[in-house]
Image (cartoon, rainbow, N blue to C red):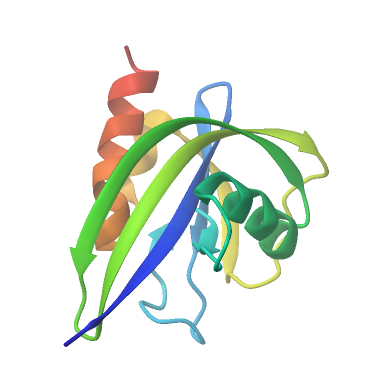
Length: 132
C-alpha cells in the first residue's frame, strides 16, 4: 500500500504574476515546476505548515489567504494530497534554497511550464481566477 503524504503549496501572487519553483535534481520529479511548500507536520494546520515552509524554503513570510484547490494525485511510489492557498508576501524576498530555480511567471504563461501533476489543477484554477 502506498504512503499518503499531506502537503501544502503557496500560490504567491504579485499583480498578474505567480511564483513558480523548479524542483532540483536532488528532489523527486527533478526539473518539474511546483508551487513552493512542503509536508504538513503532526499538529499543524495546513496554513501553519505553509507559513513555516515559506520561511524554511524561501526565507520569507507571507499572509496565507484563501484556499485554491486540493488535489489527490497518485505517483509511482506515494499518494500526494496537495492543498494550495493564495498567499501575499509580507516580509523578505523569496530566495533560492532547495529548488534549482524560482521565478515570477505571468499568468498567461503558466501553462508553458512543465508542472508536477499534482499542481496542475491548482494552476488551472489560478489562471481561471486571475484572468476573470
